[in-house]
Length: 464
Image 1 (cartoon, rainbow, N blue to C red):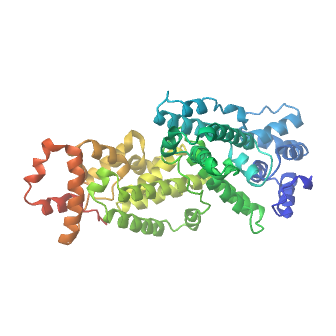
Image 2: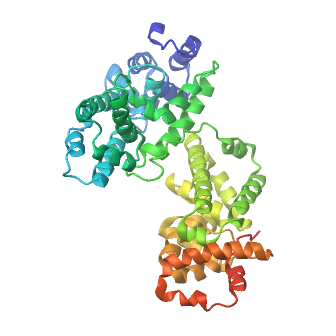
């Protein structure tokens, strides 16, 4: 059986993995090895040889009938653990080439449809499929990649006759999914480099490379399993659990194996963690203007990324250990004590995604950070406190209604600033507001003689 292991990974890792499935009584460890490290047929055969109590334990919660024959039961356990695999037949790209080469469809429609179909097909593969492909094993995702290659080859043959059509050049500017970009860009490049043979997997290196790195430097099985579980959780947050296209599903930033929050939580210094994270958030808010918010400029994106990264890291931690929900409620309490609603609501979102059931002792704090009702609880909290606000709850309001700008101002604290800083922020605010309120209301600002005083009243972000 050892001959079935990939040559690019230390053989001792596979022997240790096999020993776990054959001898360990830790069901979680057995499941992780079967999911990530063993060939499904080999895993099923090893489970078939285990005791009835181990098989029954692995069946628990998976909807597998215990009266099944042992061999069939072992096979179904492995299939359930690894997640559903699909074939490339789920992909139908027959419409793409006629649509691109004809002028019957709008370029924006073609781009959106191509992005959506490719993302939907990718969502159907499990993280285990990516692991198998990354370590040079047979994987059902290979069939999908073959379908992508066939589409590229057919498209390249069609455009190579008369040169690159204008539609394809326009489409290159509109497509957003990494695989869509690969198809279009590779086709255009094939006109000048007809003998190049690009691989569709190149477009997904942000998913595949982090997996390959897990197996470098002769790691132990426990280390490999923990790192793969982190990557799987991030994969689900970005790809599997997001069936519609958005900024996160189109992000090709490599999946991160780093999870310093996991170590910090296990050490238990939650007050120190809350303070250091709040200091970071304060620095982000201190350079932000209302004009940035209205126009969705860099400062807003940095704050949003901070919020999303914290929420995602907490979701990953909860995937690794569901018992940490109490620790994260304590962390949210520390954030609220520091009037850091921004970070507290990121904790709330992660808990909510994990189907958190709030115990009575946390009901007050959960009422503030619960994202239901567009963070209705945190809005009430901010009515009563100057704090680092939750932009997620107010950005849409700010951009749709001028009156909300003044309402939002009530949540912002103040600190002394120099005139140059006031002038700089005031300019950003004025430009943003002018775009939102139109020329008919511009006179409001032209007649405001004490602009700097007005700006200082509601736009200074330091509050701690």
